[in-house]
Every structure is written in C-alpha cells, then in structure tokens.
Image (tube, rainbow, N blue to C red; front, side, top):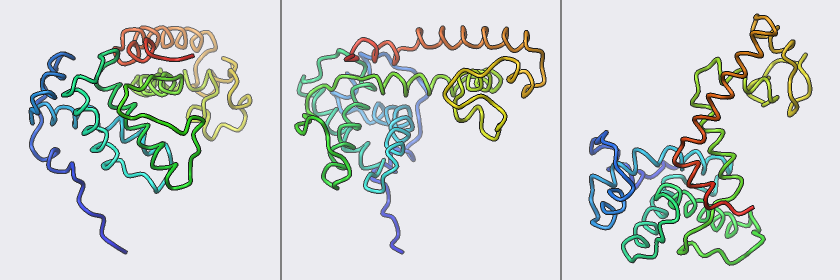
Length: 220
C-alpha cells in the first residue's frame, strides 16, 4: 500500500490561526495582497465545509485537499485580475469553483456526464437549489441536539428516524404522537418543542450571510 503524499495545504494548518473575524472587503483585500494571514484564515474557515462537499460525491477520484488548493488558486487569481464580480461572498464563490472542479474531474474519470459539457470555471458560477439545501442542512446540524432531533423526526429525515422501524414512512411528516413516544414526552409538548425549534431554525437561516448570498444567486 502506497503512503499518501502529504497534503499541499498541510503547512497552512501548522502556522497557527488568527481567530479574528474579517469583513468581506478585508478578505478580498487580503487575497489581492497575497496575505498569508488571510490565507490561513480562509483555510481554517472554509476548508472544512468544502471538504464535506467533496466527500459528499463519494468518489475515490476526488481528493479534497487537491480540489481546495486548485479552487483557491483559481478563485484568488480571478480576484487579483478583477474577474470576480462580487455578486456573492468569496466563500460562496470558492465553493462553486471547487464544485465545478469536482464535476470536471469526475467527467474526465468517466464518472459524470454534465448536461452542459462546457463548464467555465474561470467565470463566477451561479448557485443552485442543491447549494441551498446543503446550507440548510449545515445550519440544521449546528442546532442543539433536542432541536435537531425533533426536526429530523418531524420531517422523516433519515438521521432522525434511524432504528425506529415503527415510524411513518421516511420522507413524510411523522405524527407528533409517534415523536412523543420516542422522546418520552407528551404530544402537546412535542408540538410546542417542534414549533420553537422550527422558528429558531428559520431565524438562523434568514440571518445567515451564506444562505442569503446563495439565495441571491440561485437559478430556479
């Protein structure tokens, strides 16, 4: 078995991390100036989400480190050459470029056939509904366990009903009586908890900068 070569991004993770928050203009300015501190921030902040996206393709043909590095090089070059129009955040832009690189690699490996064979990764990609669904899932997964559980149960999501063979069919709303039995609470309490958690998720979603950027660039 061959040893996996070291990640070309590994040096970034070992340089320390500035926990400071940056505005979008500061991020773009840092990229334009090839600021190492800003690239460390981008790696620590953006790599985990993009890695999850790449892993979601379930293909051995893709390497998250390579995809991220190539995508960051492309995105940074476009920012430096003023080809980034700024219709979305740099994170959304970088994620879209990395996704297109995944598609291109899978196409070259014979594992993907796009509807449009000409994908211009140098252009600013537009978001689609899958981006919105993915971001919604990310925000849901960040909620506390009780809220995440009852939302997944109510909407019949796989993670929420795992091991519960007595529930309604997966993918459909689960009755509060069934949820109450699983959570060992009263049905009225289940209804109230779901209502509070759904409102909390709704507020989180509509205050999320990434969600709003995706929504503004989504093609229906």
